[in-house]
Length: 212
Image (tube, rainbow, N blue to C red; front, side, top):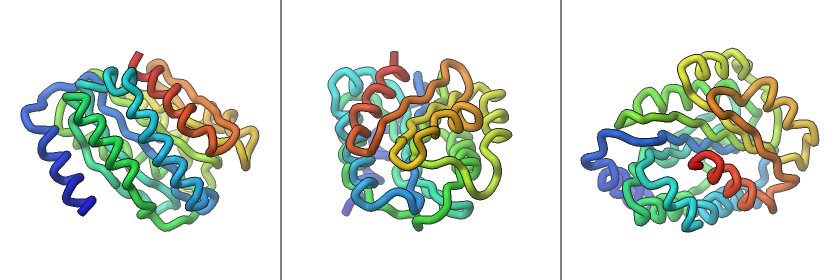
């Protein structure tokens, strides 16, 4: 049922959309360090942030997609490109995230591979966009696969912005790692939250900065 709703959402919102202000990829950590309870806080917190009237209004005119990532061979598009041409589309997108299940195998933390996957997703965006942003959220530094730094550099050279949301409950110095190896591009920034209980507030703050 959820899969059919997502397909209908994608088809309906992309109809006639040829230009977007923002192409946004929300890329969430699904590695072994994230418990199922914490994953529910990620998706519930993101959905809550998207339902903010200010954020919903700011995202109208954008494209958005959702990726789950874990180890070297574990990346998945869970919600494909969706046109947010009205606030009702943003609300439906939030509902789809809220209903999202953890569909990648928990494993290592392959941030470089996640960025490569997002790069390919951006390359097949269904409409041109003025800005391309990857929102990468996680609670650990990369420990598998391609190092994130060179992928970050390639993406930023192409004009893509990579922003980070660092959950610090396991690695208090994670922001330093994200700053060195992950974030980059025009206006790039990283935010922190102490644990997943603060994810909704941090995601809302992050989205407000991206649509400002």
